Image 1 (cartoon, rainbow over the protein chains, first blue to last red):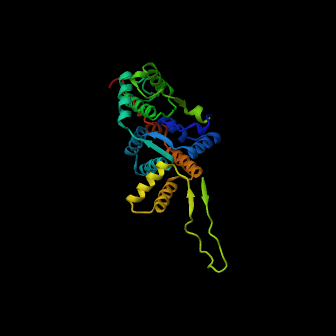
Image 2: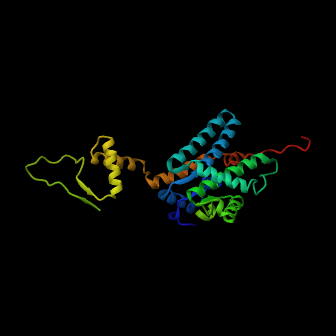
Image 3: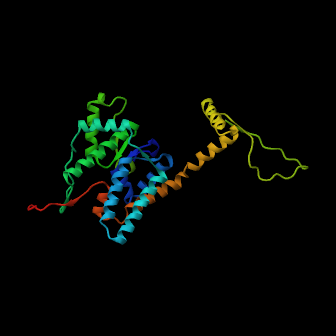
Length: 183
Length: 104
């Protein structure tokens, strides 16, 4: 567990998802203590990814299920208003993300698969680009990036370390696993 | 540094109604004070009124930290509760579709 006072941190989509699932008492206490000290920083791209998911679920749901999922989505939006600070996509972030996309054009890990379903290559590429923009947000704001997706973000960190001259005034990308952070 | 001066009470005066304001001395960084004075001029307010307004706004937007942290976590967890595994994946940004059959 890392001292909440060592924040603030930027939480990527996978880290926010981890916190949204049932937590141990110690993990929940960590979140409450952290939120007493700092906002829960998230990139606006996380909100896009999340909202797209809710809208897809709502679009494919029957009437009663739709109402329930719409309620869940509103609760997510309300959670952002209470204690989060959403960081916009600015020109410096866009330029940093573009540089990263040039250096790492393709995702370092394959599309997700399970027994009956799989992620298309296009969707995997889109998800990779969201991750790149989230990492660029952390880099430009000089915030440690909390994640639950080590493979992808470690690739970006390594690239930034290899060619720091491409990222003047930014970096290094400080990565912390959400499990190490709160547990 | 904050110094305050309490009003004096005497028997021949009316008992004070609850004080609505109190004179005080604040030590502020010069640049902040200049900004407050500029703000007050623009709004045609006294520096005291402008300072009160700005402090009130800042306090209003400050969350009650412990409560808001708990509420935040509860809302975040409710927002994911009851989703199926595949729905949760979608909300996490992972779009899964049925695999095309080999004949497609």
